[in-house]
Amino acid sequence: MKINTKDFCVAPGEKVKLKEWATIVKPFYNSKKHYQEFLQEHVDELSSKQGLLYASNRYALLLIFQGMDAAGKDGIIQHVMSGVNPQGCEVFSFKQPSQAELEHDFLWRTTCRLPERGRIGIFNRSYYEEVLVVRVHPEILLSQGLPKELLEDKNIWEKRYRSIVDLEGHLYNNGTRTIKFFLHLSREEQRNRFLSRIEKPEKNWKFSLSDIQERKYWADYTKAYEECLKATSTRQAPWYIVPADDKHNARLIVSRIILEAISDLKMAYPKVDAERRQELQNIRKQLEKD
Image (tube, rainbow, N blue to C red):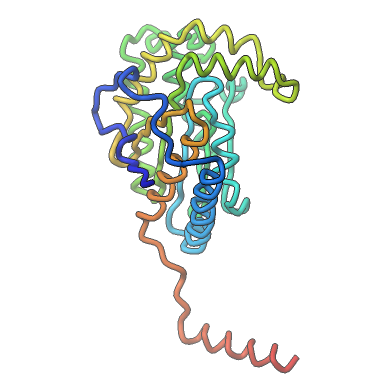
């Protein structure tokens, strides 16, 4: 079954109402075996494309994953990127900023982790936390050492959106392609996954009291995401709203989006000139005599 990735893309400037976006859609697989085979096809193709990306050394790919707790970010990264050469891919998880990080602007700690050309960088949460969590809990701003006039600025979120859009535009103009995924989870499915984490001992470590506390702010997070998605989805760095209640389906959708993004790049393996070809032929003769 063909996955139409445009169905999940937020158009630039599009007003987003998350209740109008599905958290679950008809599966793109017929059985668990079919899902595994379909995902493996994506993984194999992505591995090949990543090798070309690394060899051509002209573009970088930045993948950003955002979503409510238990939306499946870790699982998607683990399964979708399982075939990628670790030398060409790095994953960074961003939690509460350290004191040293708070001494810089809100983009600094993630900017230091941007992927080099030829590589894939993955942000599990990102600088978008600064217009999501911090917006839901504005008291966090008080610990960021900002000037008083900024703390009192009613347009601070719009200015942060502008900073983000400008950064992603700058990255695009320098060869980095940014793809952003919002894993759209329903409140009921989050509840079920939290219960599963409690019931299964091997998942207990994933659960904390703060997860329950944040559920109380579900409506606030929904509003923050809606405004963020509208303000920061651009042609150069689009947002995709991925239905996340079905983990298998979400992985297939994400992997297809990544494949299409990397396939759109104009890449080629480095060409070998006449001098290099002659050198290789000489090496071959030496090896044949060995």
